[in-house]
Length: 211
Image (cartoon, rainbow, N blue to C red; front, side, top):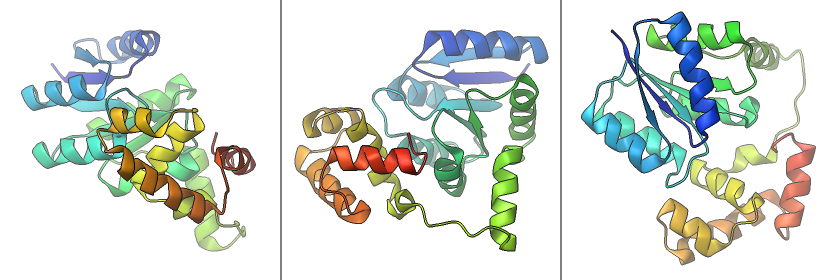
């Protein structure tokens, strides 16, 4: 009986995925978590056949969370779940050890394929991302550099919080960072993106499908 962890701060998302997974894997035992702390505690206590992890949850920096999970459970099979653009985020999570990246609006057959691949210890990328990466590698399309690719994982995480209108203090509390550290990251983000303020960052994000 495979044990599965669904980690998402929205109960409606967990309920929908839980019902779907129980339909395709009838004898699965599904645990749930709604923030970074509860996710990590459950992973310390259990060995899961797959961890389905939302990248936007309270009390966590998801890049650090993935790294911490793999530090204590190197064999963990992690499938990232998000509404964030895969062109920017998927490669980053795969590079730090996640096996797959799935958009929350994916079709049912894609969800099944992603879960199956990751449980079988295989990587999963959507057909559209594979197509984009292949054309890029073959030089069939000339892609302008996305400025958000210049950001480190930590800077990318803080950028998402800044775009939500959160203050430096709020971000520090969420990510367990000193406010001065967040402030330093914010300055570097503005410099790297060649932006003067958060309004500029939001405009840049819309232009590059980062929203």
